[in-house]
Image (cartoon, rainbow, N blue to C red; front, side, top):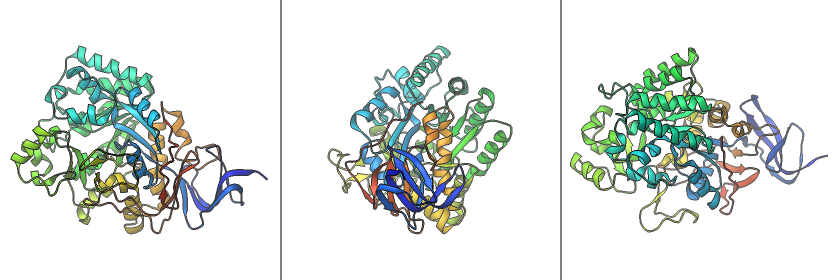
Length: 490
């Protein structure tokens, strides 16, 4: 009889690709699942998973929380692979090199960044692949947001093409932060992605309902690019850019899918977004387009919300990269949460966090210390997206079955990336030959705990989390020395 390095015994195994949902033993050797058996397996280490779900590790398509501390918080929410795809990084080789040098608890990967490449050209930035120093520090500068001549666009596209050659997982397009860019530039970037056989990941520009003067409706732009170029267009956080217009946007996506275009979506189960307060769409004179006021905005780590337009202008000028809550919908109001829920339950929508980098209220950050101290702050979605999805959509509201919720956290995101990235085809599955990235949780107790005031309270009910067959979380306790994460490259 074969003896495995590790056996997870008698758990409820959910494999979303084959539809398996049954009690099984899972045998792991060398970081790879070797057996999924209805018979008992022998292991050097055997962990009793009776009464627990054994699922593929959750794959986050949209995380900006990329250091060790952020990975640890997401591991306690069931995540095993963290991907920075919407903002991306430029140059991508620098981002990979930094993560490899420091080590990471979770698997990681990056798209290349259209916005940062654009900043490098139009602002003359010397970029280093770090979201905070590259993008957030310059988010409010108008020079990079303007329409560019064709030769400049060609230069930007050439930079992105070289980054794709360095293993980027696609192209992140933050066009919503430069909403007056000519639509032809967006199409040129999408055409590059189509030629490379990799997706784009778009933060859409404003919908026509929000800005009748927009050069192109944000949703129409994405689906048009899919139809005209043949690119796989991924629509990031469709809940927070569509808000109350989500039904119109999703109907448009559904229509072009039926016509043969590939457009995928994602959403998160919170009513507040978060971004740099200097973002173009948070200018005081534009807030009414989203039904907001300055009091809808609160700076992360500060008491209360911004009281008036003059204060908002002052903050945007002095600290444009400061992280700010943008309260779009009240998730405690069932009627408003229903907008969010419709985005989450849309056909084949992925669950993704839009996790925010951890910030420290005072003093120098220490991303290697654990547990996180009271100075650490973030958006609660960083800590609780998957626990909240399982609690609210499965256990409380019953709008998703447990296997379907698992599919949206695992197989769907793996397949979004996997069309051009063969390594992702070994993730999001519990099958022999697949990576032993596994999440073991209690379906009766799993829950988010983070709130808008206690933002880094980690989720509960995620009992074990393994990356490459190594425990990062065991018996609901994080293992601070575990750094088994590996790079995912195209």
